Length: 116
Length: 115
Image (cartoon, helix red, strand yellow):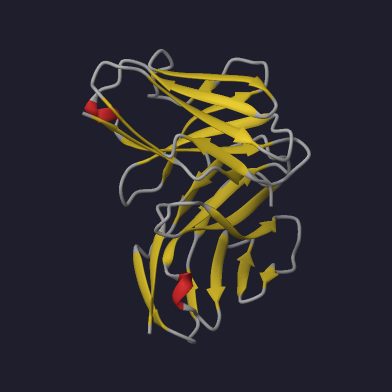
């Protein structure tokens, strides 16, 4: 079975600074996707960024980027120029295969607070 | 991204009653829908996976007779909590996916409180 581990229950960062959230996973499969989801106080799950395992290039979405280390099974999220609106729970998630019909396996989450 | 709605957003019911939660995929055909449960300050726990026109697949420890899932169309899945008890109080979230997309899209969630 696949597992996802987020070792940082809580983190804080000053506004405009950069923060990195850690995530490791365990799988014996080669075809999978990795995701970072954000859950603000509204509790709506929002997709931040995704990475296909077969792509070596790290995904980026504006201020968000990942450091995908496949051999180490590591998938960290870097948030640059942190904004107050980035305050939320962040969940790392794993999905087998490329289609959307397989379930996500979530880590326990990291609560990020951006401080003014 | 695609839009998924959930209704109701919040429900309070008496112990022993049944509650139905609807999850709708508004702008794409969701061949698969997932139901998650989230306790306060915890992560999402997968309850079941439902494929359109088929019986749902429940995760270990989830009572299928208590949490009835129906996925009769490509745009609608329902979760019915039968004979609800206070321990069923939680935040329930659905997500929609399909073979044509690599991403799941989440509904806004339903907060269930059983008195």
